[in-house]
Image (tube, rainbow, N blue to C red; front, side, top):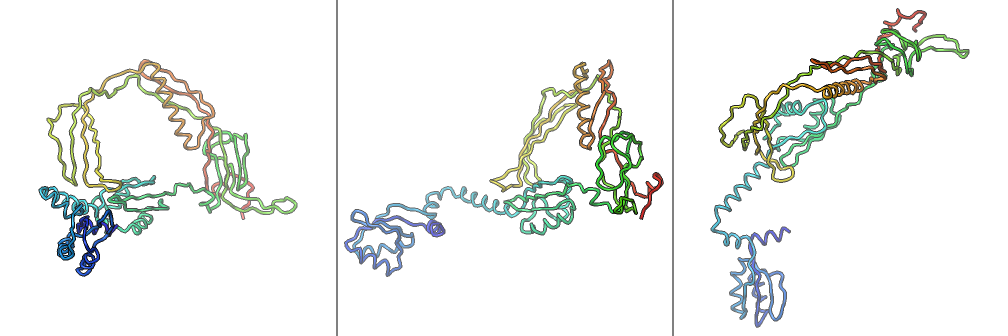
Length: 409
């Protein structure tokens, strides 16, 4: 491959050779260090390839050996330049373009961050800027391995960080530790579990500690459900001592709550008029080039900026952007819900409320919510019966005064 490129750069010709003495001609070529390759005999003559510089020397050897040389084809950069010499400006422009592209390839023109959950892109980009790594940074100054280690040290949530440079793109991939740590992994001090609300126990699985209530019991807020102690018994089954611990149990309480929600039947809605103004722009670095426009006289409007970054291929991004500014006029229109629309919105809001509390582990066991759409407002209200993990953890010492006959060793 390299030999082919070198031959193309130097330029060569395909020639035919007819001679009364091929041996004498070839010996003269060897004596004058003339290189002929791909030499083949065809129908009474030879064909071969020769460099431009050697073709000038071969004519003397051809004269001495009574040999006729004919050029069949010219190939290579020198011939291409000679053929297109009238387009010098084009060639210079091409060379300048290649130089600019090469120069731009030495810098970072886009930063992409994937996998972050608790830390936003803006927070990470601000940290990178503190490290002098941003849009337009010199690639040679960035050590991907060191940067990955610095990000792990800076953000405790990151358990894995990968930093890669692809073309002019700096790609950062992270993985966060989003697993919740259980109480049994973190608690070392003796503690008990108490009811966080009034309710009835519908499910109870005790793993550690002494149960002070059972399924079906009605409890009040603050009642001790599991005491932070373990009973030590002898072979006869008699309690001989107690050992403190961090109480651990899954306890589901059936509790009651009241749902209340209300909204006005009249509302204001944004309606686009269809009057739009569009402006195009090109951004090169910090410089903007915009198409002229006469502006607008809209009182109420939205501005939509649609921006794209130019890239030559793959991950080779350039500091060139293009896009449009779209200005859309709108009016505020007074409207009123129909009864069907109001009920639909009220149901949607209740479903959103249900999904929100379910994310916290609260299940709606039964609801008595009624929706009433009146003249001025729509109201949804009713009692809820919930199943939830409504327990609090408190230090064991705080529960000693609540229970009698407890021995702690």
